[in-house]
Image 1 (tube, helix red, strand yellow):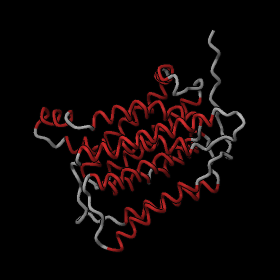
Image 2 (cartoon, rainbow, N blue to C red):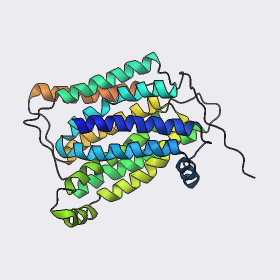
Image 3 (cartoon, rainbow, N blue to C red):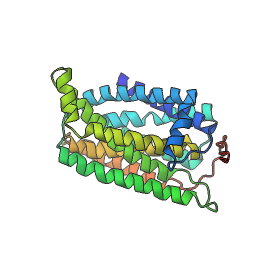
Length: 301
């Protein structure tokens, strides 16, 4: 529990610091990843945010070794409250009434998932069949990249209303969902005897390669999306998609059985359905004020 709460704090702080750093940088684009990396790596504030996210990753490894996937995701999503508070205080972002109701609905949904858990009967899965992991992850990665590209094409239309970033959040959330499953897999491989055995077991699995792909693409895609959209909306959407993806598909892939008790099963299914429903009804266009606009890119000679 302590590791999960620490991960929440580090992730929220990391996203907010990166958003603040991106607000003062020239416009970045996924079509120029090398330039994007050069800009963000030149910002001490962005580096501080990325270090906080890396520390959150380490805490997440500890969580996945001790808690069922669904329980871990329920605790992780509770960090949305802290994220919204930090976005308001440090970024000056405001959420609309409809968005606040949506965030409340998401937290209620994940609370239902947490209440469906029972420590003495819920098992922590350690392994999953590699073909099943690839069957789940590869189409999800393709869908995330396609959805992000679709959002980018619409964003280039100058006559469209400002987007909230829901599509960006869903796209990046799919990539981070795959990353979360890979982290879960890595935590299971670390139980091998000795450091050498753990490394060999890890390299013989698909998990490090999934992490490399999601790390590279997720970094570029998330930074461009964070610069264009409010962190107080895009991060909750991304977190919700990641959590639902991991809780549902991860539970099935790693063999963590659903509750046998009818009440607990109803809580878990209803909570998942509520979170999906809230996500589908979130506003697609932005009406909340934006405190900072990114600096315009200077024309190259």
